[in-house]
Length: 130
Image 1: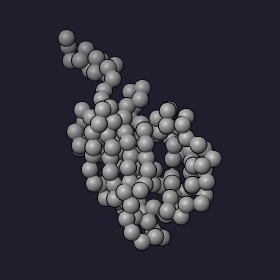
Image 2: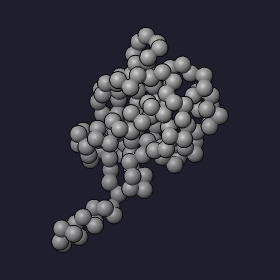
Image 3: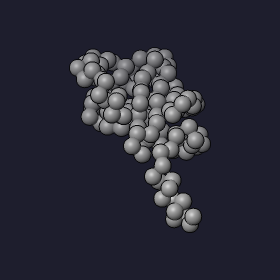
Image 4: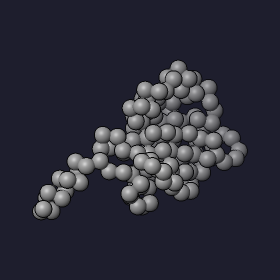
C-alpha cells in the first residue's frame, strides 16, 4: 500500500476521538469552547448550536434554550478568560473541562464540553456549565 493509499484509508475510516493526543484535542476544542462562550454571551442560538451533533440539536427544547439565552444572567455574562482543566476519555467521546467565570457574578463554574466524531467531523455532543 502506498502512502497515498494510507491517507485515503485513514480519511475514509471513522476515527475515534479518544485516539487523539491531549494536544490534538485542545487544538480543536479550545476554539469550539471560545465560540460557545461568545455566542452564549451574544444570545446567538444559531451560532451556539452550529457545531452540535445532529442528535443533540434534535433533542434540544428550542424554547427552553431560547429562554435560557434571554433570562440567564450567567449564560449572557461568561468571561472569555477561562482555564483549561483537563480531558476525560470514555467510549467514543472526550469530555473537555474548563473553569469558567462570569463578568457579573462572583465565583467559578465548571464548564463541560463533550466531543466526538459525527460523519467525519468533530461535533459537540454535550455542553453545560455547573
